[in-house]
Length: 417
Ligand code: EPZ
Image (cartoon, rainbow, N blue to C red):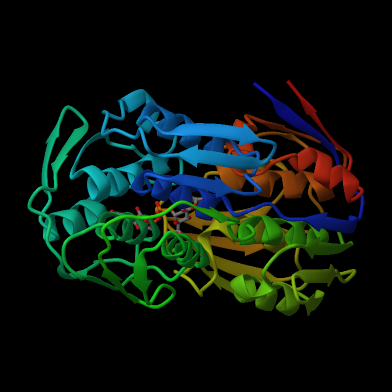
């Protein structure tokens, strides 16, 4: 199993560019199932999750040609083959293929995507929405067998503003028969980006970014070329890396308007941030202040995907901070690893009580999930001595060349197989 070996202590100093957003690329890849023409997607990030989504699409009959970081996708020969459990479990986003397959072929069979290290990851909201739109769903031996021959429109309500359920139900409705209105939608920028992509193919999706999305059905979608938005979570991760090492980091090719909640917290911690178009620069103070309270919320609140990275920053800030994880039920699995490095944290259910310490010491730690693993790398960057982060396959699901880019910023990190 690969690992990172980090010699901590260097103040990061430099500029880093951001990849396209994993959580935009994945639903957009699923959306290509709806199109019989050719789609060109630019700047495909070198994330394991994106590669696995391409594997799933190819198993469903789509043809994908890689031209550097450009994906040329032809959906003409797509067919509603069964997405087997070993493929579906490759990544949770396999569930997005359900909405798209049902939208185009009115039938689909897909294995339950299953949970992961941050929680049960149920899909009840997805299934309730599909059933409310006329889909017959039977579940047998972990497989969902779906029939949308009686699909209809109407207004449906999400019990929670689920990102995946919003995306799946929009994908299902684009080639429907009647107008569909989805209430209590997720407002994340990645949802908006997927809807913009659909509209560029000729769909008629209105209201993305608000809590009510309306879809006027169309008969077919046309091929197009598209570049998804930059990854706001990667941008935030590098900014926090600059803050925690008391350095200066400029993040390029990002959209600061998509992570104002993080910018606000970093300013409260004493960092100086300057925003200029698609660039944001951070200068960290000698002593970081605790921000007092972090509550993860749906967008535009503080993103759960930056909770781990921000918690590590609080572990090294003067004062106490309460971190409340409101979105996933077990997103503190990295905390025991952080405590091995000398952090002073108490976790009770979904709340972490953090008392800042003056320094962490390097240790052998194990990544348990994508963002918690990224948080452990940040801890290693500023710890005294060497930190080894094991099981970095979790991290490589959503960060490309993480070691290389951190070294370009002045860190001392190497990847070992
Ligand atoms: C998306 O996951 C992202 N993944 C996650 O990013 C992100 O943390 C999450 O949205 C919240 O922003 C992708 O976009 C590929 P949800 P998703 O449905 O769609 C519960 C990362 O690190 N829920 O908004 O799975 C669920 O259990 C990943 O990049 C139900 O109960 O998130 C969770 O507690 C991690 N029933 C909450 O809602 C459902 O049917 C939020 O889930 C669906 C969700």
